[in-house]
Image (cartoon, rainbow, N blue to C red; front, side, top):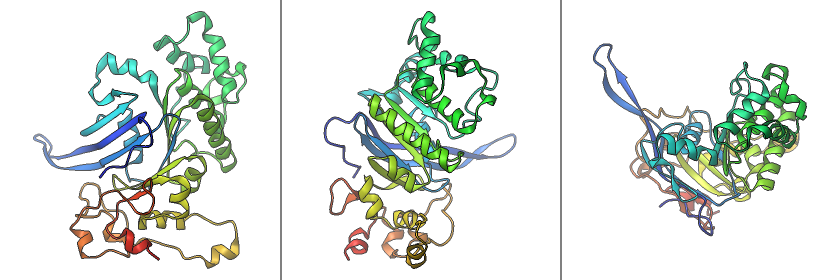
Length: 337
């Protein structure tokens, strides 16, 4: 069973998406010895204007999933349909022209901007490539984009090294907005920033999404940040979505043991409550995506695992709310009390 579509026609539909990277050995004559299953059968859908928070620990495949959706990495298998157009079937010029509808904000604002280009050059490059405005209106349009992200229009004459980390991320957001996209994937856009700056960038993304009706996928390893900005949350583990549902439901009453562990790791700003609460710490490290466990991929680290968990592959199923799904064979037993 795949995650159910939200009410109405989905704006973005991802179906059984897989991204496997071949592993080869040998010097002169290489041969394939396996595959890294970075994304291994992900399905979900989004309405236009909806914000999905994608959360999971490092190495679970979040960033690869985001890049595969945008066809920066071509999928091994599966379908990505954006506003009725199948992106996985597009190639060459057709795909380049379609990229105006979807953009990405990368994690590191220091690496995502060309240090040799002024702000005007970086932002106007996309405008000219997709012929958004005439050349005579480029400067005015770049100034408007800077104002939208909280920077003065005069900043377009500067270079990236003249800005702070938070300001550079605002520039990256402005560049993503330049071609008036309908979908933006933000890949951990605040993880490299100070806490106070993180709040500013998150509020900026939330405001822009509301004002422009943008569909946003916000990737992070911090569930508290994801809960603040998202309409729905998807929890990812070892290339699969193990839980998905409304943000408040996933955050306040998680169903999957892995989701419970992630939420228990969030610090509580109350020393008394922090000292009394029970922490859920899965033993060991995540298995290698080169050789994932049989059955449920989380069973080697799960305190509730039984023998059948090593044999049967769980699918996303609802528990009490049809919009809140978890991929766990023991969901009802674990959450019945």
